[in-house]
Image 1 (cartoon, rainbow, N blue to C red):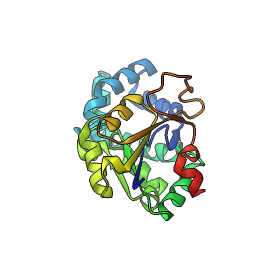
Image 2 (cartoon, one colour):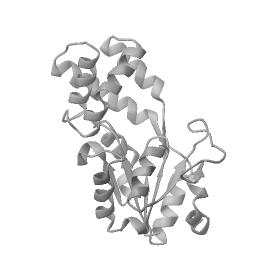
Image 3 (cartoon, helix red, strand yellow):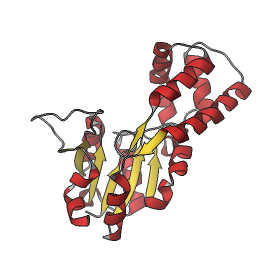
Image 4 (cartoon, rainbow, N blue to C red):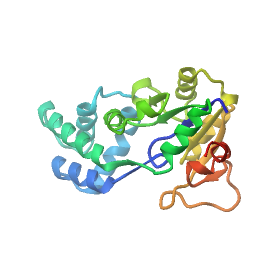
Length: 219
């Protein structure tokens, strides 16, 4: 294994989403169901960076909720949302020990995430750029998993081929995209996020990074 690629949300970090939802519901002035529909409606365009920045992303979400507001309003909300998210996103305990040991053994490690612009300040707040060789965010490269382009860009940044690489994600369809390029895949089934299945699993299941075959050697 020359390169290990890790999904972000629900794979290496967990998030206090209810607190974030309450903030947005209160400030935009909608209920939870309306907010979630707006998130879904705008997800594809936010994921490729269509709206430019966090303010633009939140303005698009508000518009999808049927709520009008100027940039000043959404800029204030963007600042408050980023601050709250930086307090509400946490690394799982197994992540850094495994990443550090694998990197010490010569494996390059990167994050690949489908996300909007609010994720970059979270990544920076967690200090991930000092722990990983690269952080590839869909909103910055205009391509989302499972599209080939985001994986190709991640491989380019680490100087690896698909055959030399492993990808870990909690979403099977994203793993399917990586596998189609020739990457070895594992599905992360964190307790409380994805229940482990018995049989019929296209991608081997793990519940923490220490269960990767190479991690046992590293640790």
